Image 1 (cartoon, one colour):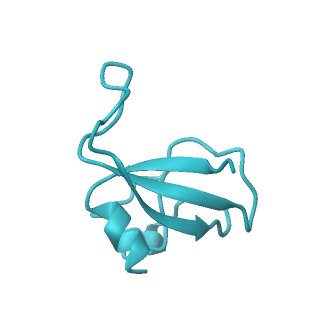
Image 2 (tube, helix red, strand yellow):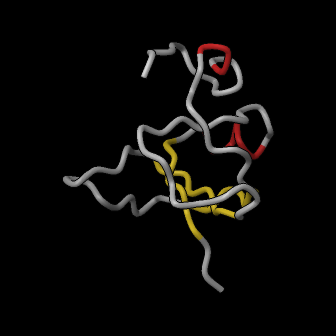
Length: 87
């Protein structure tokens, strides 16, 4: 069985699994639709071109995707964020 996955740095994955974090903010729009299931993978480090793998990464949750929309200022608490920047 194949799943789409989303890599998220700790401790945000556990907050998603505990339903404390209900919005995940990305600078890109995923090729996913409302209701799609995705695996949430927790990493200790931010993945990048220089560090594309975290050998300690682990599956934390299987979630159904809600709406994909722009991040707005009122989302700060639901995203467990500390700031909002327009655009």
